[in-house]
Image 1 (cartoon, rainbow, N blue to C red):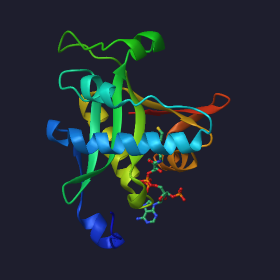
Image 2: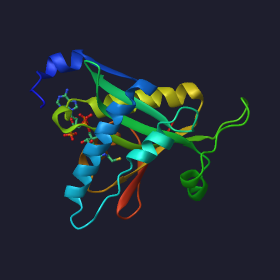
Image 3: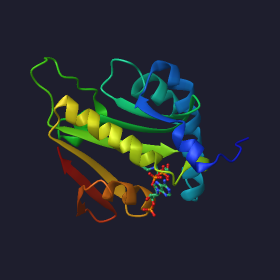
Length: 180
Ligand SMILES: CC(C)(COP(=O)(O)OP(=O)(O)OC[C@H]1O[C@@H](n2cnc3c(N)ncnc32)[C@H](O)[C@@H]1OP(=O)(O)O)[C@@H](O)C(=O)NCCC(=O)NCCS
């Protein structure tokens, strides 16, 4: 059960940092919440759980994926997951391509998914996760960050717009990019 937490106290206790292996189970709880929410939203679809994929691929140390977590009193309440991209979607989606030398890295970093547990929304947690990810992308030397967001996802649209991304209408979704 989640007890109401006063907003000010909540934000004082908030920590946003890089994902660590000890956060695994906490993130997986949120993945279950996300999947339950998506099942409610998309009536008539059955969502196969991505839990095993998170465990064995996205959150596995050494793979290309990079995750940021938001914690309140040690509990994971939000995450943002992204990865470096080559710009060829079929390769970027199917393969874990890692730089093979210190002298080369892809130009773009992609923000794939952000989720904040429902009781903790509208307090700027997603925005803080995005800011941490942008700081990381800048420090790592990426030239551009991008994200694709569905038009129905008003909250996420509002967060990304507040960060100064340029947007392009792709029909049912929008593509956002920010030069670093
Ligand atoms: C989209 C999502 C990640 C946003 O998370 P969030 O932590 O609630 O986002 P933020 O709090 O940073 O911003 C949301 C709103 O809170 C407002 N806000 C931010 N800080 C605030 C504060 N201290 N006090 C009051 N409001 C605040 C923001 O201005 C924004 O308001 P707006 O929509 O009116 O512009 C969350 O709703 C979610 O997980 N949704 C389901 C999953 C999903 O759709 N993920 C995206 C797919 S990639």
